[in-house]
Image (cartoon, rainbow, N blue to C red; front, side, top):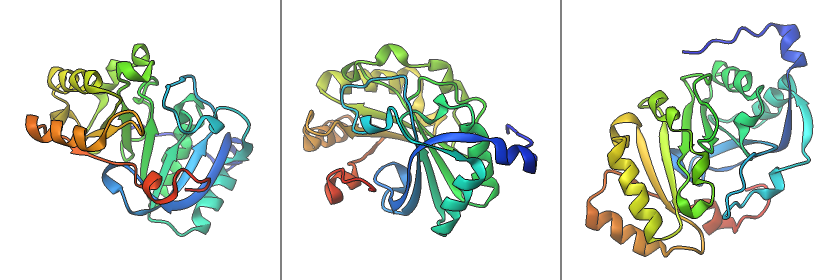
Length: 226
């Protein structure tokens, strides 16, 4: 387990650029449907063609780690999701994750799979996105991350086409992902592949994966704060 000793003085000086902090239902992953605080960090080095959070690429508010923890605590949550953008693009994401775990929350990290997850606290459920060819960022996959996976982690594929599905199945088999991670998630790219078709493909091939829809899109259609 990675350990990061942060003194009270250092805690005050550890800043991150934050796009938003809000309380909603988790729309994806193995905690889908559970009330969760989302801490959305600003900035991302990738430009996936289906990205629905481009507003987090720039701007945001500089906040101290202490201020972030206070904002999160005000919601009295059980679950906290650190997301982006690409949260690991900010080095101070690492102590943020640790401090959230220390506070007793169940913490998840949504990451593009292009950044090294090795320094992150193993108490965190790391949701690692493997970019498909249809994302237009497949070259950014950092496959060494797969060696870091534990049963507490999840691997996610956003499927844009039948070709993407076949590619994802090939990676599932090549890396025995269902044995490396606690969950393997197949999600249809909104408006690009028919969700029922993807469900039928998974059932027909008897895959050891979890089909998921983005609950927040169904409920709130990407309204801010959800």
